[in-house]
Length: 297
Image (tube, rainbow, N blue to C red):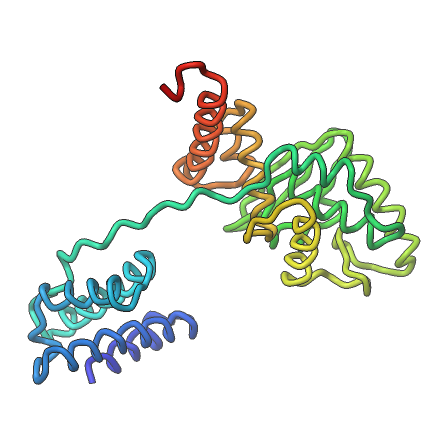
C-alpha cells in the first residue's frame, strides 16, 4: 500500500521517467521483502534504523552488491520515508541518519602515450571513405576529449579553420571551444573531400556519417573505437570514454593546468577533473621507484 502510493506520487506528481520508476520499485521491493522475511509482522511504519542498517549490511556481505548500488537503494528508502512523513503516515524517518558506505573511487582507464603513438602513427587504416572516417573518429575523440554524444552530433559548421577550433555543444546546451593542431586539420580536410566523393548528393550537415551516409548511432561509435583499441591494449575498457580519459590524462601528465583541462572537458566543477591528477601522481611514483637509487631500500 505505502510503496504503491509512493510510486504513484513519483509518477504523477514528480513525473519521474519510467526507468527511474522501475529502479525505485525494484529497490523498495528488495527492501520490503527483506523486512517481511527477517522481521515478521513488523510494519514498515515501525522499522527503525537498526533494521535498515542490517539490510544494507546484508546487501554488501551476502548479496555482494557494490557500495554505489547500495547508496542508491538507501537513497530510495530515505525518499520513501520522507514521503510517508509528508503524507502524515508516520512522524519519523528511520533511514535519515543511516550513513551510506563510502564508494571507492576507481581511477579512469586510459591508453598510455606509447600505445596511442602506435595506433595513430603505425596503424594503416583502410583506403577510402570508411578508413578516413574511422581515423578521424578516433583522432577527434583523442585530440579533443569530446563525449560520444557530442561527436555524433558534431556538424561541419562547428569546425573552424582560421583559427583552428571546434565548437562543441555539451551537457546542458553549454558551448565550449576546443583548439586543434595541423595534424587534425589536415585529416578533417581530407575527410571532407572523401565524404563529398562518397555521398555527392547528401544534404546532411552532420560531420561524421556511417557507411550508409546517415548519422552514426552510439553502438556504431563504440564498436569502431573498440575495434581499434583492441589492436593496442588488452584492457577490458575500450569504449569512446577511454579516449576522453586518455586526452585528459595525457594533458595532466604533460603539466597542463587543471582549470584548462576542466574547460576543455566541459566539466561543471573542478572536483570532477581532479581525478586525472591521481594518474599523474601514479606515473611519478612509477618513475621514482624505477629511477631513484634509494626508492626500494
